[in-house]
Amino acid sequence: MAVSSSSSSSTLKIGIIGFGPFGQFLAKTMIKQGHILRATSRTDHSQLCHRLGISFFSDKRAFLEADNDVILISTSILSLSEVLNSLPVHCLQRRTLIADVLSVKEYPRNVLLQVLPEEVDVLCTHPMFGPESGQNGWKDFAFVYEKVRIRDEATCSSFLRIFESEGCKMLEMSCEEHDKVAAKSQFLTHTIGRVLSELEIQSTSMNTKGFETLIRLKESSVNDSFDLFSGLYIHNRFAKQELLDLEAAFEKVKRKLQQKMEVQQEQSPNESKL
Ligand code: NAP
Image 1 (cartoon, rainbow, N blue to C red):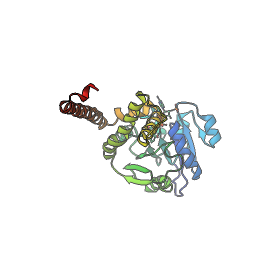
Image 2 (image 1 turned 30 degrees about the vertical axis):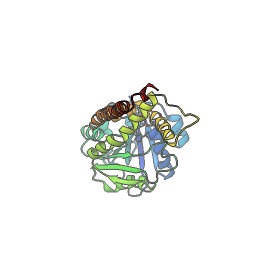
Image 3 (image 1 turned 90 degrees about the vertical axis):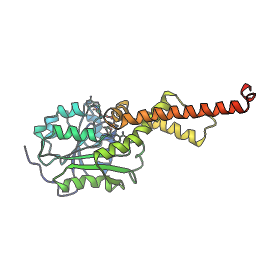
Image 4 (image 1 turned 180 degrees about the horizontal axis):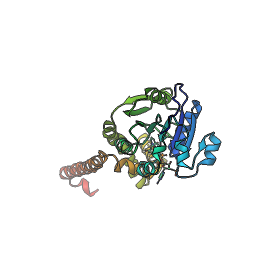
């Protein structure tokens, strides 16, 4: 294993694996901060990378050997295992920090620990914002992370500073805790947005504020890929219960309405004929 130069300054050489919507979105702020970026991806994003001033590698080996301080994994949740298993990880520089931004956390932590050599540092993160919500900056958005296996604290701190310096609310918590909370918040939000999309709700001439919130929720949910949404379900062990609870809650509301209607009909039987 080769030894890369240590990142004593706060300028990092960051290699992104998975240059889709979220990888591109993160890259723009990292470039603005003066970091040096490279990318590799399934699709050829070389023209876009050229425009952004990023080197694009189609050869994974050359990418891994390109003296990265940090390798940032931003592939879809569903493709993580396939992507990591296709990497010649023995070409990794010993001091490289591997960080991921997947929206579930226990799963990438387990896969990274399984696939990567023991010498490689691992930081699991989830920026709780995206290309739409974070389009005007990252201030006050939560950035969740767990230092899973960190020996080079300096590089890890420099990487975290990218988000700190944009004003993110830095939340250190275990991957397990993240997944528990995210199932009850993010997964629920996406699920309801997808249900509203199945209902094909549309703006009307008499929208209430509440209905406008539902329209926005529907639109923001379907802007994210279905791979992302299904990854939240398949690879977060707490999400299954959340879906069952949602179904049960829906049935409970239906039952309460039905009971109320029956009481009303008993009290004023003639009303029900109107
Ligand atoms: P995504 O649909 O979750 O992932 C798209 C990325 O995955 C692209 O780089 C794509 O590569 C790659 N990919 C998909 N299938 C692949 C396969 N079979 N083999 C190799 N690569 C494959 O959309 P995203 O919004 O860009 O999200 C990327 C990651 O960031 C996800 O893990 C997501 O959970 C996380 N994240 C997203 C947001 C957000 O708001 N979007 C926020 C926080 C975290 P190509 O582009 O090369 O085809």
